Length: 315
Length: 256
Image 1 (cartoon, rainbow over the protein chains, first blue to last red):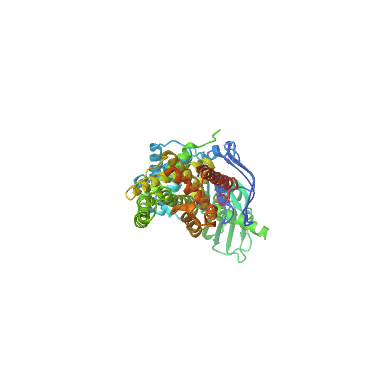
Image 2: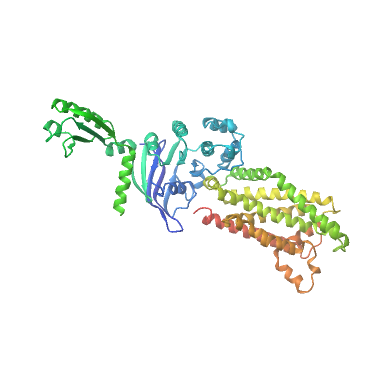
């Protein structure tokens, strides 16, 4: 367990229109981790980021980053935080190099051409350094925003939907870059719609809905705790009754006796192993089968389950 | 404890100047053209039939007023655009998330506006020499006063740019208030020469004091004491600083 780099306690935000975007959020981010914040549209992901980054004034609660209270000692805290916003907002007429240099200066660092070059090269933008931002493609603009956020070498980086509207190829490139940042010790908080992304990148996952954090846990333990394996086995002959050796498995027999359904495991391979054992037991019991269809639940299934559960509760 | 981010302020300053340089052609050509037109029409054609005012040739007399007219308009527009556009396009997120406060932001924006104001003034005065003979009596006071006025109106523009939530609102104050008030503020005449009640009413127009102040630095003549003009300008500056400090404190239209 590493030290917390960001602590959020009881954070609430009620917009002037009366919308409660955040409703008592408690969250602790550890040094060096990649934290994925998952949630449907309007869940409060962007407001949460905006509150930490100073774009939105919290209605209540405290935010502490690197031990500095953001309400009072914000200069020191902000100097170490970088933000890549969701919208592609850039100064269209500025050149890439100048835009990135400006960001560095704005955050109080001395000009450093070598550092800017390194950032631009790592994002494959060096060839475009003298182009105006408006001439770039959407994917490149997104990378310019990342370069701007990295120009002051932040220790904590927020990526708000970094791969929204980015094609598959570029998305993979983005993941590699995020991985490289983690290697350098940058703590990353990202929000995403693509659960696949969280599954692939994150160390921990937080699920937010209606301005509340529903659950925060290590991705692996969420998968372990809530992940399941499902196997559908089509039998060659209908069965009336399951033999004892088979009934010991978490299985159910369909009404017509033609299909055996297994549901168990922990999302960590235990299920697949059990399904293998089940097939051996079937053969040992002299039961023949035609097909086996095995499927592990993804973080997406867990997420959809969790969110819809809460929806029912709220209803 | 970091209490002031000088590099941040410098970065904003540089960027604002750069922004002006990108449209340098327009920002230089347009005031040169406008001023030339004024001098041709009012200075040479009409001015030739006018009596000197307070011993100053009419062509020379209108220089401070014309200078003020362009400076107020350009500075206000420039600075209101400077803050409105990032709000409009969303790039303001960076400024808001950066370790810069109201002091750095204002030094950057206002410093750049004052610099641009001085450059603009130099261009206009240079253009004026092509049409009129004039000498500036208090050149350093003139530079100082021009800087003071541009700083004040860039703050004013900054407030406008934060207040405006549409392009229409952005343009309406300079168009409907600043320009008419400058025209009526003694640009083309001495307020003392206005008949009866009008010369009193004219002083309800704050811009009359600015024109009068600048004219004093040019020719040593003025409708009101230079100290009154200075006091009023400083008062306006302080008022704008107060409003902006309040905006940053409450986050009005900047941070929800």
